Image 1 (cartoon, helix red, strand yellow):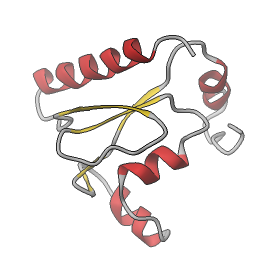
Image 2 (cartoon, rainbow, N blue to C red):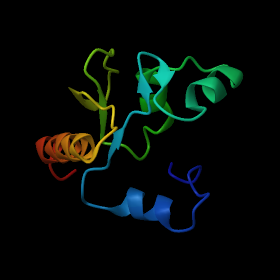
Image 3 (cartoon, rainbow, N blue to C red):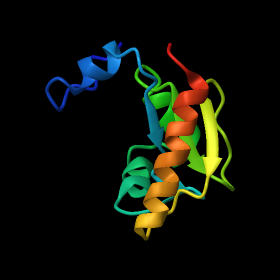
Image 4 (cartoon, one colour):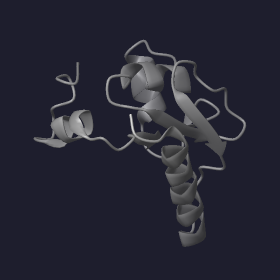
Amino acid sequence: ACARFTSVAGIAAALCNTKAPVVAVSPLVGGKAIKGPTAKLMRELGVVPANAAIAAHYSSILDGLLIHSDDDAPEGIAVAAADIVMNTLGDRMRVARAALDLARAIGAP
């Protein structure tokens, strides 16, 4: 199930085989990419830029998804919401803590 995520050698296998919860931070806020072309690429591929699409696409490797406070939570995955916009070191620390808190809440698979 994890075979489609093999563009970086060893990463997919490590994510699939870890006993630790795998948590991602959504690249979207309100359906728009925080940085980079994520939302544009999703639309070009015919995918609605939404957390549900991200959760579905990575369902074989993710245990949890950290989303922005005001965004809709996808179903079928553990979710936590926080301000995920990172401009300062303090912002990055806040998001890292929120991701770790989600991983702790999920526990070992």
